[in-house]
Image (cartoon, rainbow, N blue to C red; front, side, top):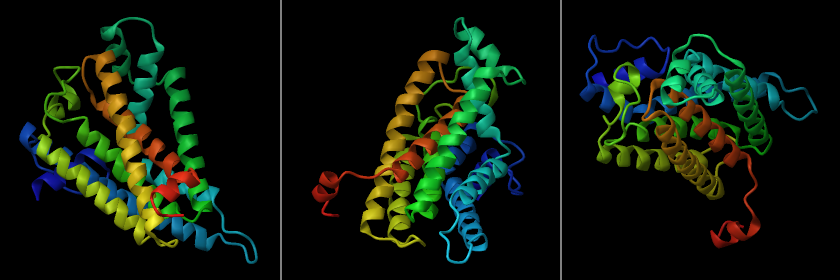
Length: 275
């Protein structure tokens, strides 16, 4: 399927041969399949998390959590060539400079990373790793990294829905902005919610209904934050760019991991019949 190959070519470093020519129609369908890319990346990273926990376990001691978390997040960055983190750094630098929209866009085009960009990446990655470590401690690490990877790519899909403009006349943003049909975006959202629920129910670490609900809530929270973030970025830059898509993916993944790591208050659990 040409659209699926295009999605993996755009969003990963995996050796998948994409189409020789990418037009807006194919690009829109590829971005609609971005959550599928997230599912594959999350699954591979979850396998590494589980494997690391097994091989680093010291007899009569609790399994490691920080090292598996670091390796899981690092693998996601490696499989995407660090492009999303690079976009996050560029957006951080753009918000750190004074001036209008054109000045901010010019800063985002620069190949170097400034202090604001480095600080942004540092803290986002630290939060991702720490949240995943806490989730691993709570025996929901595998489902957490899987759901976070899908939610981040779903946020990219929703950032390319019809009516959302591009900040520039060229580049990735110009190719994919407004290219995803609303129907496809809705189907992608429903698909991610269903897979998240199944992942929580069938989680390697001990799936149950509570984890299924938590996974669905985490996706919903991540999407809500990404929607607010997208509107903010569009107001600041006049539309989306490839860099804002990368930043949206990383921040949505971070928020999703935080939600998976958080303790749901007992009143909420009781209202859901999960206490």
